[in-house]
Length: 105
Image (cartoon, rainbow, N blue to C red; front, side, top):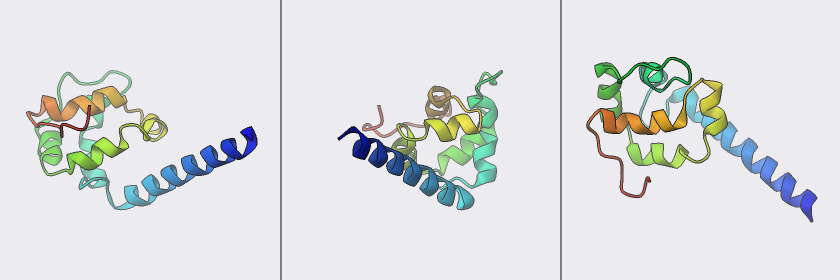
């Protein structure tokens, strides 16, 4: 029984990573790849900036924050690949004066 569950979990992880990669080619949640990169310094694992840049906040202001919430739990590997701390990334909208959806806690 453990083998089918492990296989299912592996397939699910592969699917999530593949979908993120496909969506990442065109942007994620309303953020283009370039806009996403504007926020990397403030969410970096190593030596993050104290606050996000005005360019990052402008990009987040037009992003689909509900969509970003959906990535919160499944994007850990993907975020680490880009050296982004998930907790710092999820704090960026608040630092920009944006309210996260209530279902994104």
